[in-house]
Image (tube, rainbow, N blue to C red):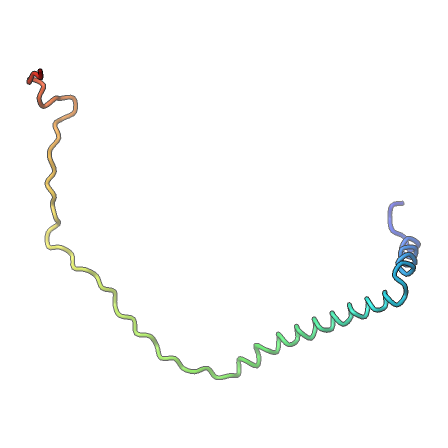
Length: 100
């Protein structure tokens, strides 16, 4: 039960033959066969193409001369930028001064 037996397939085949007719089904199968043959021929052509191009000698290209990278010289002494010293946290530099 529930499986497709041979009788189910025969009924489906008869319905398809009635709907499409014998000529359309045979034309369709012929087109499918032509497509498969064309696909196989294309695959065979692809396999032969790399073998034929491997026999072609390639032109020799001279090697490219790459100059060494340019590195800027390091400074003799590191540049020192003086910074203002900050008072310790929690102290006011002008606490004794009255504003007002």
